Image 1 (cartoon, chains in turn red, cyan):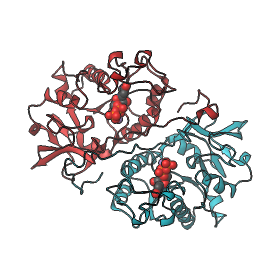
Image 2 (cartoon, chains in turn yellow, green):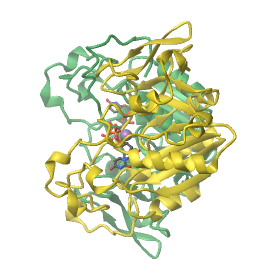
Image 3 (tube, protein in one colour):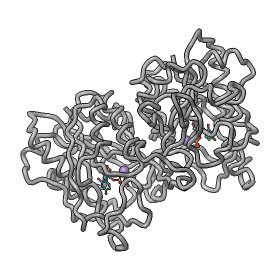
Image 4 (spheres, protein in one colour):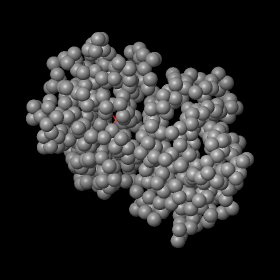
Length: 261
Length: 261
Ligand SMILES: O=c1ccn([C@@H]2O[C@H](COP(=O)(O)OP(=O)(O)O)[C@@H](O)[C@H]2O)c(=O)[nH]1
Ligand SMILES: O=c1ccn([C@@H]2O[C@H](COP(=O)(O)OP(=O)(O)O)[C@@H](O)[C@H]2O)c(=O)[nH]1
Ligand SMILES: [Mn+2]
Ligand SMILES: [Mn+2]
């Protein structure tokens, strides 16, 4: 079983992002979807979506502590409103990495399930997943890695291999990081999570360093990683984002707030 | 069978858009995917994707005539290059609606298949589709309509009904158009296409008027339309876009052009 840990929060694209993700997970089969809402309480939107997804799931809630929220509400999301504490504090912008507390809640959930085997993958709600990705990562013994498309302002990012061993990285920004890869670019064996009860993401990590910090607790060197999809030089997942839209025409005609989007 | 007519062209998100679409179509079942590439010849990328999609398909090519292309290549797409003819002609920007010739090629393909029954739906590559949409549109007798999310700079656009009859429209921009709805917001019975051999989209139509022109050839009034998903007030499809990215870091590290994204 692949345990997918997915942080999610109220944004205009939340439903479409989770919906598209549910489709590929349903096709993949033999997965368990741990969805962690960044909100005060579980929402009906996510609850219904999971119930209708046809995918086995665990639905959790873990709000990001106020001081770690780095959103500035100049534009107020009509669905979410604006947390008072954030108004007019521009220094919080881009300060903290996103989804950290949620992924840690997901790790705790995996430990509670305590599966005899399997793989853990940190799968953001808005990325694009191939079926081949899930097929390939099931073989993970310790930590597997692969190419991530449209990541880091590059066509792709990921390992460079020689004779099946990771020898270098294709990365633009700070290639000197210990593991210069995207959250979407690796999976970890459940056993590695279970044997390290303290292992988690560090919310104080700077943006871009989260993955490196985490992987350094598991690995001594990149040569220990298991590169997958490199035989075909295949990009298996893409760091996509759904375009943000401004609801400029909303003022012209009253929309029914009870209609869910 | 639902005949989906999907225009597509080389952009950074082409593969991810088509891939996510293929997932929901595979789950929907009993569809036939008519994919029309806006390019000089069929590409290996689309060909492979369709072959691996698990969805019955027809793969066509129909290039938009140069004078109808409205893209200005200030930023050159590394995958596509820039058609010479477009360089420095800013007056072409936003002039013509997109995907018109491709949808017409799709209509011709439906006529060639000449199915005894079924439904035709114009499904852009980058939208987000629910499984309920495909379930619901199979009942289409003439023209069915429903709510489209994240469309027209509104939360949603679509019909307003009374006792199951379309009486008005929820639309921001030019609600006075005969049929102020999105391309993603309606489906047409195959029989209506077959009985009108000349019916097609008008490439000279102004942006926003394409749907109205087309539907005026089939319908006398909105009351003839079959609203679906209105019992649950459900948005069945969303006019999403995949965020465009700039490959700013590409210059720092050479990426392997043979790796497909
Ligand atoms: O305040 C936030 C912002 C983001 N996320 C989640 O964290 C992950 C990464 O966020 P995002 O996709 O916005 O980051 P980006 O793609 O821009 O790196 C996604 O699953 C989001 O749903 C969250 O839980 N709370
Ligand atoms: O030059 C073009 C531009 C667009 N399209 C296709 O036409 C449809 C609508 O285009 P797009 O999604 O860019 O339009 P928008 O969502 O911005 O209305 C999509 O299926 C595109 O792949 C095309 O075939 N050629
Ligand atoms: Mn994201
Ligand atoms: Mn589109």
